[in-house]
Length: 324
Image 1 (cartoon, rainbow, N blue to C red):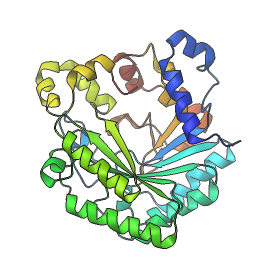
Image 2: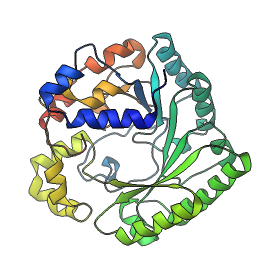
Image 3: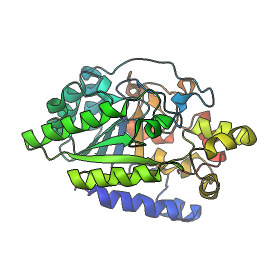
C-alpha cells in the first residue's frame, strides 16, 4: 500500500517529538528500518556553487574534493537492488551536496526511476543555475522540482549563493514553467526560500512570485549545516558565532539543538539511504566529508545499512544539532 507523502512527513515529525524511551519502544527496535518506506537520496553530480552556509563554502575547511557524475547504468543497478531486495522506495531525491542538472543524463535517470518506482515520490532539488533542456526536465516524470533561492536581487542572493547568477535562475524558472505548461506536465515547482536574518523583504517578493505563477512557496529555516560543520562549531564557538549571526538567528539555533543518546536513535539513519555518484554510501545526507563515506551499496544488504555506525555517527549523536 502506498502511503501518502504528507502522512509520512507527519509520522516522522510525531516520532521526532517523542521522548527517547518511547521512540525505542514504539519504533526503534533493532529490526525496524524504513518503517514508512525508504527515502533514497542520490547525488548524481558535483555542485557549481560555493554557498556560504553549505560546507562547500569552506567556512570550516571540510574536505570533499571528489568530482564525478553518476552513469545511468549505475543508477539503474541501484534501483534494481532495491527492487530485488524488496525494499520499498517511498521517496527518491536527486539531491545532497551536488547539482543534479549538471549531469546531462539526469532526465534519463528520472524517467528510469518513474518507470521502475511508479509509486515513489520523485523530487529534484536544484539551484537552477543551469537548465540545458527545459522540456526534458519538465517531462521526466518528477513529482516536484524544488528550486533553491535566498534573495530576489543579485546583491541579496549572492550573499549565500556564491557563484550564482539570479538573472539566469529566474530565466530558467520561466523556461521550466513554460515547458511544463506546453507538455501538460503534472510536475509541481516549489520555491524553496532560505530564511536568513537579512532577507525578509526578499522572502515576501518570492512568495508573491510563487502565488502569481502557481508555484509552491516553501520557506525553510536555515541552520549550521552538516554533521562535521556542527562538530567544528562546537569546538570553536567564539570564532564562528559572529559569522553565523550574520545569517541565522543564533538564539533560535541554540534553543533547537539537541544530542542523541546514540546512533540507534537517529530517525535519518532509520529512514534514509544516501548514495554518492560512484555508488558509495554516506552515513546520511547530513554527512559531508569524503573521509566519512562508507563502502559500496552493492557490498551490503539494504536492510543492513541503517545498522552501520561509522565513527561520524557517534560524533553526530554527541554533538548538539538543530536539524534532527
